[in-house]
Amino acid sequence: MKNAKKVLISVLAVLTFGVSYLTACGAAGSNANSGVENSNSSVLERTSESETASSSDFTSDSEEETSSELSSESSSESSPETEREPSEGLAYELSEDEEYYIVTGIGDCTDADLVIPATYDELPVKEIAENAFYDADRLMSVVIGDNITTIGESAFSTCSCITSVTLGSSVKTIGVSAFNACKALTSVTIPSGVLEIGAHSFGWCSGLKEVTIADSVTKIGDSAFVMCEALETITFEGGVESWTAVEKGANWAFRIVATKVVCSDGEGEI
Image 1: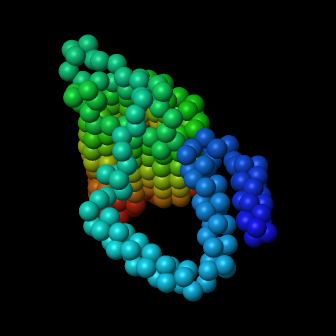
Image 2: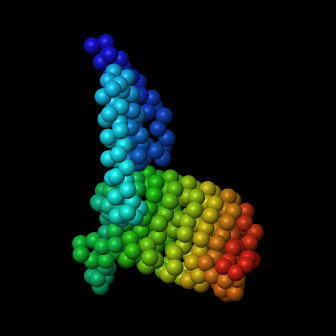
Image 3: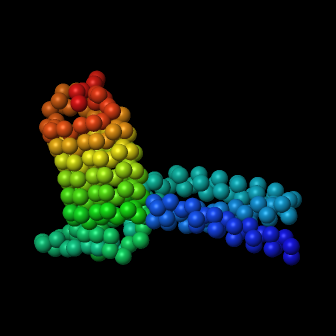
């Protein structure tokens, strides 16, 4: 009975500690709740192990073997993108020709890790509307479906908790200020197929350190990476000649750390 009371007190203490120290970004996402639950589980597991040592050793060995087998099977059968289910509850609008959908906003979706699907209601999802997720500060990561061709103006602007963005294989245009002031974003890869990086699209992303740009890009807009003061490395997946041919707007890389662009056959000028 005394041991049970001690366990109950420990659990309540962990709950109180976890809730009081959640950050604003963590509290917005499901990961925060998961963290508290994991802490509670850890307390119960440690108590159980101390009371039933011999049984715990046997169970632990068995669980480790099972976990290892499941992990091996999971890694061989799925990729990081396919593991995540499309977000539900997003707001959509049918295109004028009624041939595809446009994502217009967060709708009733409560996901912190956003996955924009390739299809909705049996039609492709091809666009993300202007301001669709503007200032959605609970978002922590974004995966964009493979049918999306256009990311609209300010679509994810000032989403200050986004740490990662995965662009789909069909994206052609990244709109003006699309990811402007996503301060927690640390790296981004502009995939093959993208033609234009819009003006201010990644401006003021103060945590951005690495950018990889596909050689399909032909235009980088004004101030596209302006004031990315932690940006140390820009990699272009083509040669120096191709990089030189890319149209670059005024102040596209103003106030960044990098002084050269790493190309496949040398270094290009900023």
